[in-house]
Length: 94
Image 1 (cartoon, rainbow, N blue to C red):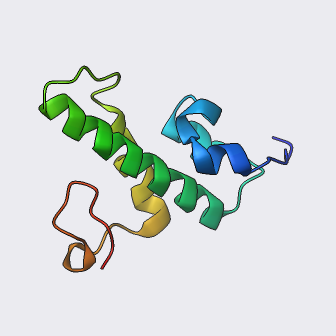
Image 2: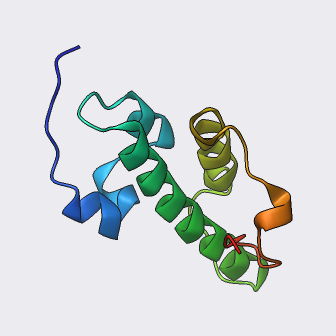
């Protein structure tokens, strides 16, 4: 696979508009590990927000997206330290 450069402005604003799947982020040859983590963390936050909206009765798009993002992110971050996460569904780091 050849390396492709990427303008990070759009994926950092709206990862789902740039990438079809979380797996596509991880397999992108033009992104560093740190960039992949940053994009997936932003997408994780967005997906968690969407799940909260769904739980509150608003229609959602992809109920499996948050799980797929977390599964994809895990090897890049070696998991999340739950002792350093906030109590919200977005699990903001403390």
